[in-house]
Image 1 (spheres, rainbow, N blue to C red):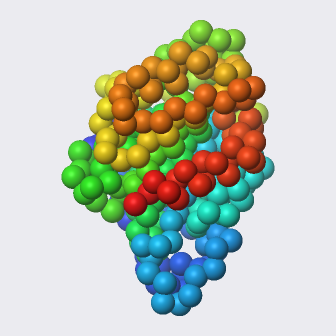
Image 2: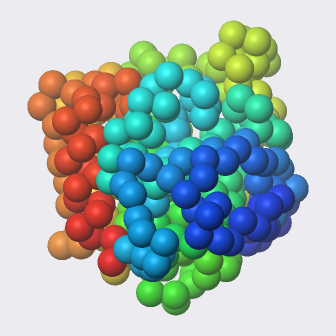
Amino acid sequence: MRTGPAGHVARSTTVPNSETNRRTPMRTFLRTDDGVTIDSVYEPGALVYDAGTPPSGDPVFVIAHGFTGDVDRPHVRRVARAFAQYGAVVTFSFRGHGRSGGRSTVGDREVLDLAAAVTWARELGHARVVTVGFSMGGSVALRHGALYGADGSMREGRTEARTDAVVSVSAPARWYYRGTPPMRRVHWLVTRPEGRIVSRYGLRTRIHHRGWSPVPLSPVESVPAIAPTPLLIVHGDRDGYFPVDHPRMLAEASGDHGELWLEPGMGHAEHAAADELLARIGRWAVGRAG
């Protein structure tokens, strides 16, 4: 699936770098470095800023949805509304999802999609960017955080794609996990021709037929490289996809750097994230992102 340098990202199809555009909802297609068009939405959020307010005081949340989600799904819109109480919001559909181009690589090339969305947020004038990923999007947010440093010391790619805080919700710690019935169903969708047909027509998700080559850095391998960028790991103790050994592995790999919230009674990803939890994440992010 790999066709180019994993950290590089292309500019968006628009470069709306002005105070006026920063306060105006927009929808556009971004283009990643490997040529995939990504359906993206910008919303200025509920906070009101004076004309002279510098972008450094204006945070933006870039939301990375889970597998089979997209920018128009009700659960993604609910998450966007919750974070809009704390800053501007960029949502987008990963490749192969919704109206975006390409095919899903289920966590590999998607790091380019997130980098394009972060770059767009900075082009809009935002100096503080928080990436928040759910499930597959959580694994992508962790890898992105490992590749793009908040202090400008880049592991790969462009400095404008850097993040200032990383939040991972319901993410796996390791690849190829099949230990629960829901994950065995996911693997059937991804690896079997008939599964990919069901995914395309039943779930609006187009999956690439080729496997990973090479295998990308796993989430647990990515976590140590995120420091010194602030990191929050959120997971439910009733997650039906990834049991609690996954977040504990991630937290252990982060050492003293990451923060773990193990949420009692919570299930998996966006659907299980209560408004109160999203509000806590929003407050955490605003306090940590520079």
